[in-house]
Image (cartoon, rainbow, N blue to C red):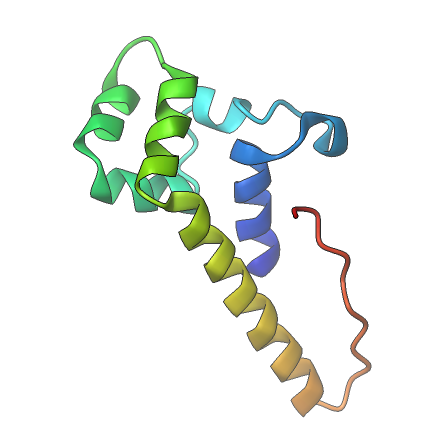
Length: 103
């Protein structure tokens, strides 16, 4: 879950030079990732943007920012990451920290 949520974040706000894909592609294709679903539940404007025939990608990303979708997703990724580490610790498996992709 942590990996997927982090991928969802990168698919919207990631640095194209680091990820190798356009950060706007997930929004342009109307992918319903965690931050998008979170924002769609909270924003009539974003629902309108997603329903329009022509996607306003910068406007959609700005609206997601306005309703706190990135913050929500980053927190969810951290929580899932911590739960995974706790499960590994409980199993006595070796745990190696993972380098973060976002600052």
